[in-house]
Image 1 (cartoon, rainbow, N blue to C red):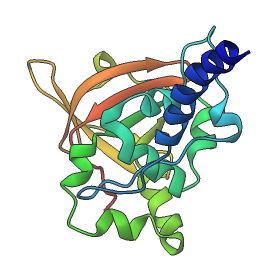
Image 2 (cartoon, one colour):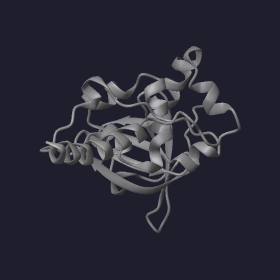
Image 3 (cartoon, rainbow, N blue to C red):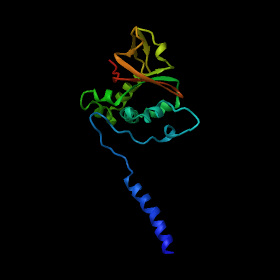
Image 4 (cartoon, rainbow, N blue to C red):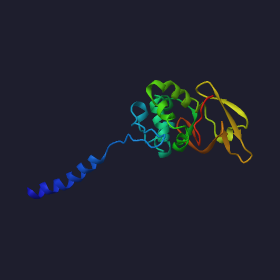
Length: 185
């Protein structure tokens, strides 16, 4: 009996210690705001399908600020359930380039509509691959405004001056990783 209790303790103690170390940090560094855990439809995981644009962003450590902004603007479900669309996804470094305090101000409840407008400015309806972009062409965004595409001779593309650093396909669209936050005029 003592041997069984000792074995049980050997298994339970590490498990309890591991559980004590779990938790989420709410600290932010620089302009970064930490994302919350997804819930509802956006939290559904399907091992058989490709991830949607939100799941791709959540899985990228370079886009935690974008995910937090999507959550603060209550825009996660819209990008989870519909499509196809093209998303210009600023990196955490891009958000850090905003003036100090800008992101913190935008993620406050009273600025939710403004934040959502900015995020919608990063979304095009339909799928636009890099090779589909035409130089000096304006494309309509989800917020009703437009962005200007510039394409150089070497094939590199900028959107309102933000350089596309890479592209990731998703089940409901495509994501172009950009080095700047796009701000509507």
